[in-house]
Structure formats: structure tokens, C-alpha cells
Image 1: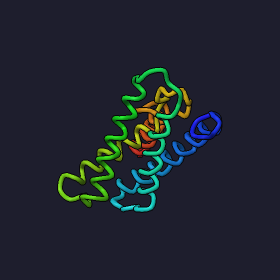
Image 2 (image 1 turned 90 degrees about the horizontal axis):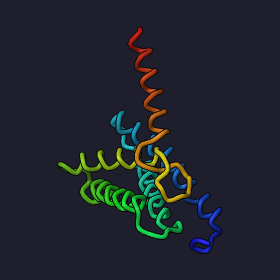
Image 3 (image 1 turned 180 degrees about the horizontal axis):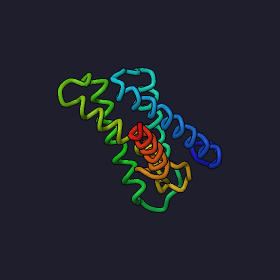
Image 4 (image 1 turned 60 degrees about the vertical axis):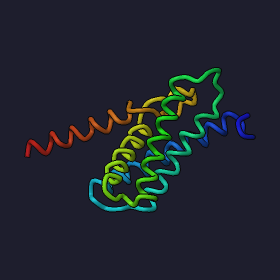
Length: 146
């Protein structure tokens, strides 16, 4: 039992939050590339990404390990991105702090297992990111042939 839920149910909630974070993160990054603010998607992305990191700390662990360090770093990056967006309104250097923080958070959500043992597929970089990069390379390659 974790927070009153069976481990299986808690893992499903954690995975659902992660997947929502991944999808909304891709949409937010697309908006950044197009110079379009997507406030609702951004809020959803930041909230689900924070919740994914927080819920990962509730999985059973015998010691503080690398996955916990990644979780703490992720929350620090997200805190900076949230402060940049909502408190400093992207003024001056806070615009870049937000952009870097959001990109790192989206990258973390799209990667390999974070090490908590939940198997949700979150982590820094990894297979989903490589698959997306390969897909983008193939599109760029096909454009170069035109």
C-alpha cells in the first residue's frame, strides 16, 4: 500500500501522470518552436511533471540512491521553470531559465526508467527521445533530397 492505494494502482496513477506529462510537454515544446503560448497545456505539463517526480519518491526504497538524486534535481529545475513563468513573467533572463527548465523537464519525461522500479519509462533522455530524434532526422533527410 502506498498512500492508501495498492502498489499496482499507485503505479498506474504514476504512469498516467507521466504519460500526460509527456504528451502535454511535446505540445508545449511545439508551441515554443512556433512562438505560441499555450497556457493551459503549459500548466498541465508543469503540474503533471511535478506530480510524476513527487509520486516517484513514494515507491519503496531501502536507501537514498541515484533515482532520488535525479528526482530532487528534476524538482529543482521545475521549481525554477515555474518561478520563471508564473512569478517573474519570463522577464529578462527568466525567459531562458524557463525555456531550459521546460526542455529539460520534457526530456526527463520522455526517457528511460528513472530507477524507482515503477517501470513507467520516465528518466533523463532515453528510448522515446532517441526514437523522436531518429524520426526528426529522417524527415530532415527527406527534405534535403528535395
